[in-house]
Length: 257
Image (tube, rainbow, N blue to C red; front, side, top):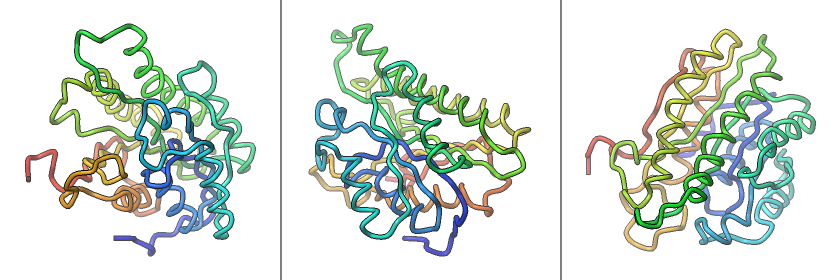
């Protein structure tokens, strides 16, 4: 479903993890802009080309997507691509987005770092990369966002977790640990930021057909499904919803399949 009835006119939203044509991030950016929001996007194509989902990965992927969106008449602005593993980059992305859009009232943390290795391949560097990108960067971005938020407005943050909290794949242990931390972060910041009129919710998009798997994906969700939910969470329809972990996964998390 592409829910075109939800409007976000006047909203100013930063979306991270926008670098691949087939990814959830690109779909989020397109759908939010189509709903009337001013959208800033951040991505890091080098990740896709080296350790990430390589299908539809391209050098300068974020820049190319922004160019396509602008050519389609959508209000999408580029935030300088950077590696969130490096200290300070996450906060700078918030500052740049707020400067270019004239403020922010929405933040979608869709970026992630994930690699699969066996336990005998665990290293401190391997673990630190996952925690730096998936947890530390998210925490620092939420802090920066909360510092500049206009508390007279309705502000919303959406994080992304993974179905690993239901069915752990042991070869993705560092990723699983970091994504469980995102759930804790969501619940904790929802409580901390409620007095500032900032709602914080988390989406588990489940197995999602973003081009990385070549097998049967007929039971999987599509990027547009996650976008529908995110649009709702950033709209006035969700004014009373905060601190929730929402699985949009066709029942994968409860063993429906």
